[in-house]
Image (tube, rainbow, N blue to C red):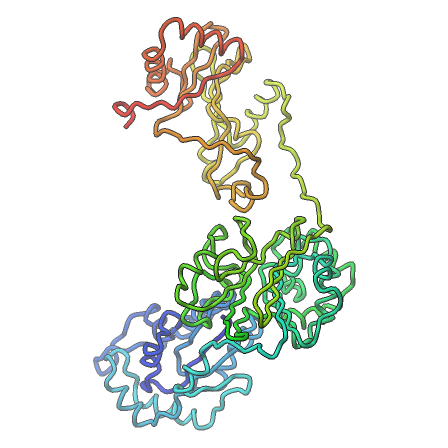
Length: 576
């Protein structure tokens, strides 16, 4: 989570040892370690190796680059350095403000100078700091104060203060937890049936706007209630778009820029008020209520971590693992024996019910597509599940049709192939040319309605006849945006046929009218080209498989129906 911990104290007071004892090494950026990455130990005038500070400008520049990358993700981070001066601590303030971090200083200045000197002498030779430096630092510590915007902790206070504990919400008569709203104001107000009640708590699990068509109304409602103590808004991935928009930053979302932003701009909201609102976003809500413990995040977790503080904000927002992971059942499996109930939104690829598993509630109901707004109402008597139909939504946008029309002539299609950067032609015997996509199409992932058809395509360039072809280039799950699992769930047409593909290679059998003969092809070649044997093997296996009557039937069938036959060729002795 968005927490930065700075250590402060002389070399040798035990800061690095304390980090190991607290199990914080994986979360720590160490100035000394970066110095060693920049340059190995150097010999001093007394002949002993030491860590040099000659490159500290580069060291601190690199440390801040790494820290910035971490803070962009909301990673919990510890900085192991001396931080003697107030200026050395204040250098983090700008980043902390930008990325909404809480900053703590763990103060080791109570360790006596004599202890630091003694422990410094017992360190590894290259880590020993000159004692004159320790004396100088100690004098600075007497006059330098920690800035007031930082919370100071003693080492012994850290375990208690920096452990994320659940809050008790027993004072409320009911708790309402809302799933993704996505700009669907009608569904929200249908559930509320009026304004909120002061003695009840309202938790929003994120994704307030975007995709829906009532973004203005939802934002108006949120701004009107942003100061209510009984309203908690958890940050979702779409809420990050609103945060950036309100702060004048670039938003990398076509949907937000094309639809949501114009709605907000047309409503002429006071962006200062919007900024105040988005700065109230929570990263999660962890609470107890009448003996039960609840964890609410936007994206969902697969287990209950030992310390929630160490979980990256981006993981809380986007969820642990892939979008396609069944996070609800994984949570129950991985938290066996723990009495914790998970509530989340964001993802529901498998269209699970609200109570997706024994102790995990999924509040993603595709409300923005005409589905339901999912809400939990928690009382002392138990948990009620609600699904509110949304009648106000945007019809799905259809992508424009491809460049090629279904009834395009062969001459026009060949012209497209000839002009295409990612299609190659190979001239073969008997006036046949084969067309295929280039290797560059793979490396640059350049696919369109033309070059997906240029796959095992054989054309007689004199008679202008397609003599043989296989099928269009197809793509694996997650290989293309249109084959991502979350896209397929919404667009796959049922029934779906599943094929078991044998482990061989592709061969086709077509018909060349000019020669009045069958054409055997594979890997961009015909069987007339002897330097590539795969097509010849297709021909050999074909005649070994079918008798003369069957061959005559196949020849007349492919000729009269203007089709090709597509085979999986299995020849382990020749094509292992």
